[in-house]
Image (cartoon, rainbow, N blue to C red; front, side, top):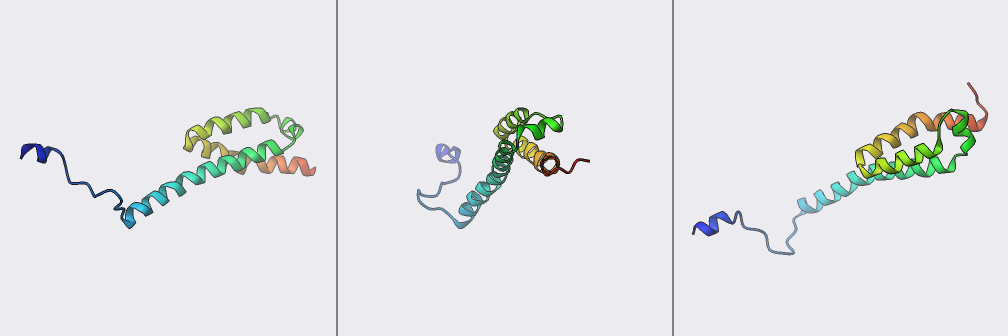
Length: 102
């Protein structure tokens, strides 16, 4: 009797998955896909921009690539660096490429 009580609550039989479990897994996948997607978008944008545009702004494309790739290893870090690039740096690069110098 004491042995059965120490085993914990009974587990559902294999193959019995509730709707809540499925929704939790889908939610976890979606929450992890957003930061990874942002990091991939930022990385693709970084490598598609010319090196001279980064140099004109006093930035290094290599540094941004390395920071984005390493930041992706920690999902939150990747999202922070990707958002920083996409919101702050990308518009500046786009303006330089278009010849709008301020």
